[in-house]
Amino acid sequence: MNKRLVICSVVTMLLLAACGGTPAGPGITGSDTTAGATVTTASGDTTSESTGDEGSDDPIVFAASLPLTGGFSIPGTLHQEAYQVCVDLINEGGGLLGREAELLVSDNQSDPETTASQTERFINVDDADILLGTFSTLLSFPSSAIAEQAQMVYPEPSDSSLQSHSRGFEYNFGFTLKPINYIGQTPVDVLAHYRDQGVIPEDEFPESAAVIYLDDFFTNSISQGLVGGTLEIPGSDDIVDFGEGYLNEVGIELVFEEQFPAEFTDWVGLANRVKNSGAEMLFALTLPPAELDIVRAMQTVDYQPSAAFFSQGTYREFQEQLGDAANGIMVWSTFDPEIEWEGELLGEPFGNADFVREIEERLDTEANEDHSQAFVVCQTMAQAIEAVGSTDNTEIRDWLASRTADDPVRTTQGDYYWDDIGLTADRDVLLLQWQDGELRFVYPRGDEYSTAVDLQWPKPEW
Image (cartoon, rainbow, N blue to C red; front, side, top):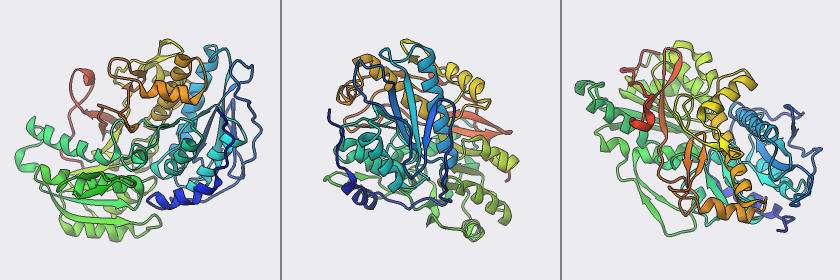
């Protein structure tokens, strides 16, 4: 495949097509590196080269544009750590196709245009063999289009939106366990489940809710499912009808809704408006680090909802910075360290417990969702390379697209296969809750999820 394409002309158009603004955060230059990785700055300076020819002695180059600085630096750094652990494990196990693996990382400074430019450079200059996705829909939307033009698989650890996956792309695969447009259904299902189980008394079930959300592709998608309406899929005649929203379906009245811009700072004012609405439950849909500002503002005005769902907050720093105020907050995730998912790496069993152990031993920290999502992407691409016996991205794409429930990709997050637009099929996200300083898994329930604990109700005061 000839990967040396001229793609620069599409970058601006793609950025205009993507919803949402650039996250707040300083853009800084300089470089950072971890053992065995090459990290470049937004200027594009790098020392890695690879021909990508099959059967050569050159390393197989895995390339990722990640937000190591700027507003997304926390999840971006965790993605880098997990990608590196995966590549290290591959090399310690003998490599792929008789070749070592190499990780090439560029810092996109949480900027979508930089992400697109770096993805183009990976393809046209660095001749990377395999692309690994970035963090957030905002950054993934333009870079996945660059990859599609080059006919390179773009596996996305954190973009599974209907909008992104309705562009007719063949090389775009999402790894979020459920399309983000439907994620709001899960916390609503949790409330109904625990009401039916008697954990939430009937007379304490919330009757009203406030939904506050960042003006961003990701958070706008979640909010629409909660509040209702229709979604027109760009470039098609398809319309998704959310009716009156998931809240309405269980009898919760939406009494307050507010969208805020990326540069928003009046958190106390917003908290006062939420409090004055009388909402019994809060849905806060953000990207890091706004969730921290929101909790502190709610403390300031003494707003005490009986339940709170946040779209961000699975990372340890969330609890460390908020302390007891994190307790009772529900967050969605694709990962829990106690679920006994079985996967494989280099043809050998390698499940969730193995992943958790390797992260803790190698990084001296707890494994979390951002580690897990990134690791699964790398693990999947390694399985694909071995399965087709090549780094040819068209062959890899065909193999991924042909996975089924009976013949899935086996990962540390369970079995993966995809529908005809590259969205994960037949999975649901997990619902976690901070309880006594620990993140506990509370939903779904069932044989596969035997480690789940009951929801803490009501939420303790901030």
